[in-house]
Length: 464
Image (cartoon, rainbow, N blue to C red; front, side):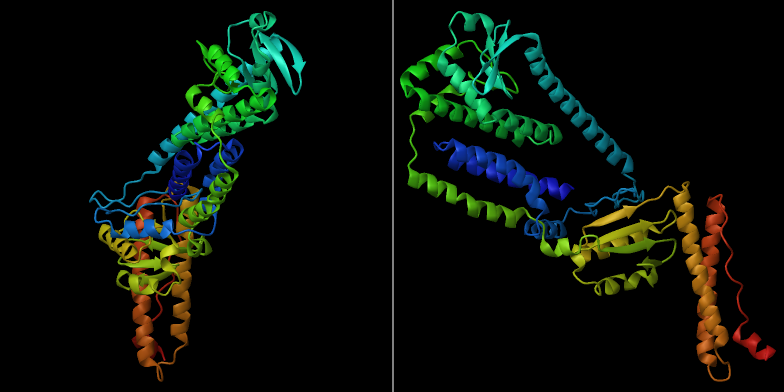
C-alpha cells in the first residue's frame, strides 16, 4: 500500500508538472480538461498495471541504504498483525496498535471530509427547494434572496433575485453559466472533491482542482464569445461583475478568480499544427509514466507466492514447515525462483532467541527480501491454541513415522543405520519435550504427549 501511494503521487506530480509547464498556456481547453481528468484516474490505475521499473529502483535503494537497520513491512494481511522487526535489544516491538491508530485516524478524517462534502451539496440543493425558479434552455434558474455572484451547480443557475429583476444580469452571464451546465463541469468538481476527501494527505489534488476550475472558465468564456463575438465588451462586463464578489466552493462561478489569465486566454490563438503537436506529445508521456510507475512484471507474477519462516526457541527454524538449521537458511532460499519478488511470512515465537531473529534479518537483507508479513497471533485466542496443537501434532506424527521406519530396520543387516535413526529420534523427542514443557508452563490449554521412545538398538538386540 505504501509503494502504491508513493508511485501514484509521483505519477500525479509528473503529469501535473507537464500540464503546468507545457499545456496550461495553450488555448485548447477541451483537450486540457480531458488531460486533467485522465491524469487523476491514470495516476490511481497505473501503479496496478504489469509494467514498471520504479519497484526495482526502490528495492535497490533499500538494499544499499546504510542506515536501513530494519526491514520494512510493505504488505499487510487482513487476519494477521503486522509489526516491524526492531534491531534494538528490547526485542520485537509490536506496532499493531500504531497501525490501528493510523487506520482509525485516516477513516475518521476521511468520513469527516465526506460528511462535510455531503453537507455542502445538500446546502446548495436546499437553496433550490426554498427559492423561486424558472427554466432557461438546458438549466433551471434559481433566484436567491441573499447577495451572491452568479454561479451554477449540476443543472441549476443561481442568481440574485433583485439584480435579475432589475435587469442587471446580462445575457452573457446566462450563456456562461449555461455552458457550465451543458458541459457538466459540476461532475468534474465533485469527482476531485471526492478524491480530495479520500486522499486528504496529498496536496496535489488542490492544485488539480484549481487548474480544472480555471479550465472550466476558459470553456465557458469560449462559449460566450462564440455567441456574441464581442471580446472587449465581454471583458468589461466581466470586470464589472467581479467587483466584491466571492465564488462558491463547489459551484462553477461566473466570477471565478485569476481574471488576468482568462482575459489573456480570450485573446490567445493556438494554431492547428501546434495543437496537434502538443496533443500527440501526451502519448509518449503516458507510456513513459506507465513504464516508470507500473508494477514490475516479475513482482506481479510472484504476487501471493509466500515463503514461510518460523523462528522458535532453538537454532532450528521452519522453512515452509521443514525444519532446518539457521546456518542453512541462505542456501535453502537460493533454491526459490525469483526470490527478491516473493513475500516472506515471518513468524517469531515468544521465546525465540533474539540472535536468531537478527540472523534471519541479515539473510533477508542479503537476498533483498523486502516484502514480508510479520505474524503475531494473540496467545489467548483459539487461533493460537489451534496453531500450537497443529504444530505439536505434526511433530508428533513425524516422530511416530521415524519410529516406525526405525523399528522396521533389521539389526543384523542395518545396525549402523538403525543407530543413526535412534539418535535422531532421541534428539527430536528431547526437543519436543522441551517445547511441551514451555507450552504447559505458559498456557492453560493441554497438548498431547509425544510418543514413547522405542527400545534402543542394544535393547532390541537383547530382546531378539
